[in-house]
Length: 305
Image 1 (cartoon, rainbow, N blue to C red):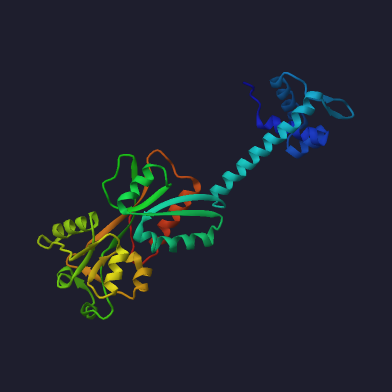
Image 2: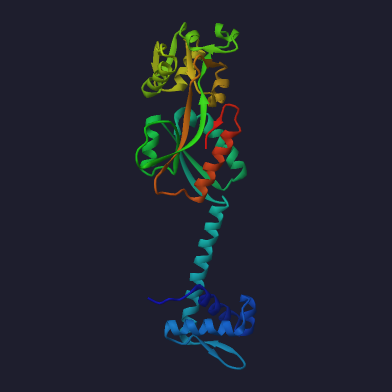
């Protein structure tokens, strides 16, 4: 295979366009002897003469004339590729696919995307909302660049980068008796109908509660699939629920009150999930860094690096 270098191609194109070794050398900021050496190396590699030299003018050989548009196109394509890489590195372009659990996808993530787009409007974030249990599979399949999710037993092909930790809060209607208290305990909320999520969310929460208290357990009166359903039922006065306060926009929309949930205080860690041995693109890394910085500024966030 021929070992033609970019320097040789650039030297040839400069000489061909200017028809002058002196002018071409000046454009490339090299000496005429260095320029002549590059042209000679190119000719030796190609096995043909591409430039005819004389004391008065420079002309392309027949092969040189045929080769010129090809060399120009190669350099243009490479320049465009380099510009594209530079734009990706500086977040001037790119597509980033992110998966997040349904509640986070309809509350925190739109806020983050809107804030990111103000600074980097040319980078598109494509959000995939899904059940918590589906978050890892989207990373594993390559459907998304990365995901955000709570602590779960990770696949051996997934790397979990600690993102933030957030405490649970009690959620209830504005006219609820719990509203007279500055904080609420788990024993307090057990006196009212509890609306909780089905599956692993409540199972883990109940196990954490029992481990931390030694005696308390979580006994929901109603179990639903989505937290948005639970919040809607709470707003209708059907009971209380337990939520994570990153869903502030939704809590405000339903006009619900929250209180710190104590004795014991339980929290949930969230992670940025990536596929092992698959480094993030510059655009995806930029989005991940922005998310980390954004949540670090929230009053509910306790950062873990």
